[in-house]
Length: 216
Image (spheres, rainbow, N blue to C red):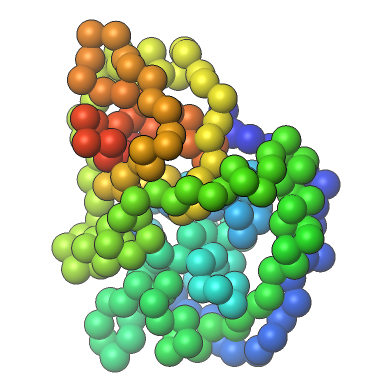
């Protein structure tokens, strides 16, 4: 189900720019833990909603953080991570410069190499999920973890039994995020839901093109 990207060392594509401390953070939704700071990176684990991780460093554009979740290290999409700042939960994406976390540069040439390994082009990431990066995560930071809809099991089974080519867009898959209009959705027979394989996961979408469940 997951798109594999092999033969690339994350250590080889990063150069530290600062040397600061790590910090604890909480996932606001079930969140993929990836081998690379890129939606095309292999999914090595899933961080459950409200689970705690240790953030060791973040990319200088603040979009990805290298974290440790129960002994497994990988990259998580920072808009879905919150940390404590002045005793208040804040989205890491908006506050990397205020949180004592090391920042690193990502070598774009090696990122494109990862895209080539995955059979992709740079244009595959031109679109972005809607509302995911800050709107969804910011709401979750104030109101608790995002909850998936109760989708009938037969609908989920149909989606997993009828895979489609994976579409990649900027922004991690998460319940509550919107699907760009340019992304073609597939109708599930006898159902109000549609679906698409997005960033390595099948996702079920409602009539408003909002993700209601990520199938993992």
